[in-house]
Length: 392
Image 1 (cartoon, rainbow, N blue to C red):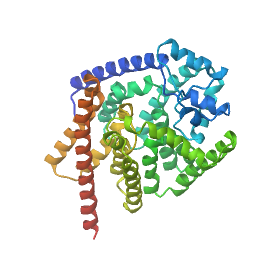
Image 2 (tube, rainbow, N blue to C red; image 1 turned 60 degrees about the vertical axis):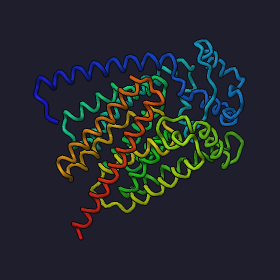
Image 3 (cartoon, one colour; image 1 turned 120 degrees about the vertical axis):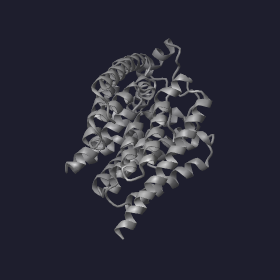
């Protein structure tokens, strides 16, 4: 992307202003709501109250003095809450430090951390997957990410995707630096939003970083076993119960397979099949396709399991794969492919908000997104096949 100095300054100023407004609006909403923070679920866990049994109960509000402030606050702003512990205990334990402070204090700290995670994501993307992009494109994509509705809503509802993506990128950065033990720990922490980072973690399989991947999984097996002991229940229950809570939300996503199928049971089978296929691809894919693969994993992660539109802020990552693919293709085809990506990105970031994320607007996004993904897969596959034939 080439811009003259004047146009560049104007574009930067517009995007920077939009990003600052987005930060202010997101922070304001976060201080008032942050209903997805899961402080309540983590607090239940630390009190040795089974948060999954509470979540599956009709009221999902445990009668405990330590939780009274949380529920009283949301009742006071007419936003009644219930516990929704859809994370495994090994993940909920990561929030334990926040349960040592009052909920309203924890919310402020979580907001500050989410802003720091955002800065860390921008920095680590440049150090990892976006290091080949021009400075202008990198800055524009970063500002678009923060200016977009998904990021703002991510901050506003206190979600954990920023937290998880930061630690995934940190794991990649540390692994590339040869620090496999810290990388393993960072990768384990990144699984908090496993619906995003479990597919992304397959990147480590592709890179043959078996130690990092194995240790990150082993830590959660140990954490789940500890959670079972802590709550006085079985290891199997500590797997089944979080999944049971998650399944209640399966049909409430935006454009993922389960949402489009109305929560059909086959959607979970399809998701598992896709993960197995991706695992095989990551094992067999030759080196040299880092950008294409991380983009493919990002794109697929948003549709194989439950995701609301606030997770779409990761979409700029896919641009590195778009650039890698079109660098090996026909010029006209590449121009159209890049333009289509930008249409999908801008519609995700701003179009849905214009239409108040109506059912019709989500249907349009689904059509755009799945068509783009299909085109991405076809062009990626063609490039791999051509490269393989060339070597033969």
